[in-house]
Image 1 (cartoon, rainbow, N blue to C red):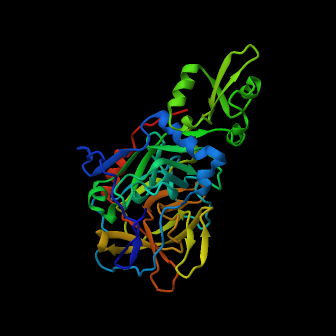
Image 2 (tube, rainbow, N blue to C red):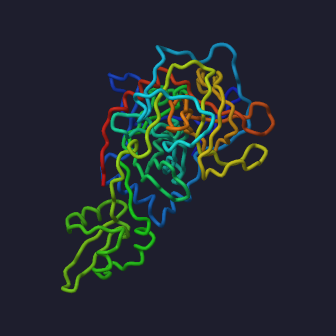
Image 3 (cartoon, rainbow, N blue to C red):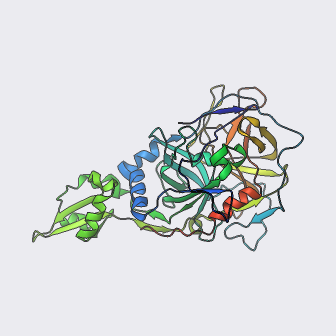
Length: 414
């Protein structure tokens, strides 16, 4: 499913956008986009898939990447450079405040996991984070966590973002991806310098967890009074029920029930989907910084998993972790990665893809400015331990992709 690239001593996952992506709009020029879930019923199918069998697919998902032992290529001359004036977008809730530095670290609520079905038809995940946007509905991650890097086909069937995810728990709801945006050069030229993506998401969906574990125990013609009081179901009219039956998920039979009352009248039930609200309203959203000087310190927040080259299992991937360090210039000629930045980090590659690099992270408000996303890791001193993470340099090209996505409405699907 994934192609690992060794380039100039670095390892990363880089990719092609799906075949058939929309041509970049004239207004944005360098932006490519593709729909993920175009309709509300499609989005509900996606949520139902991940919630089925007590969140079995979520719990069984594996990290979307692999580790390879290589040597990083740091450079002292050239490298990333601003292509216009430095720019920042304040975080949600911080529009009139200045983000400050902090010595203590409270983990951000904005970071979580992206889950999707890959080209291998298996469930996988990456790291991603909520960012500022007009409708508080935008997620940032690595471009290779949005589009397949091997089969040249869109991988993100059933794409969802779950902030604060932990072992099947979805404390803020499940947010289904609506539209994905990336740079045209990543689409066409596999340019590692543009390996980033922004995804608009629908309002989150929540539902009682016991509505999934116990529903199978109620027979198709179960007692009406039982189903009426069951927390995971809502009663609908026959027309709505028939519409649900046509959806891919509900064709399986579970997720919908029919019951007769004492008079023999039929009543129809489907899973109850409650609107959890907009992503940013629930967890906040990081700001954005671009065209910044290389050499500034950043916090990296992500869900690393897997082993170091020496076999040490440093991270489980279950909980959010962080590292801290200054950025430096890195090049990757094999994937046209001439303007990458690296930072010292012990993150292993599995699960760390899409990790958020936050500049000027404020401990009290748990917000800062997104200034990178992890696209790979490296062992630079040949001691069989990963010590460096790297990201595309955020410049005006990145800002153009963000601007194409930031003002698009998605709304509720409940």
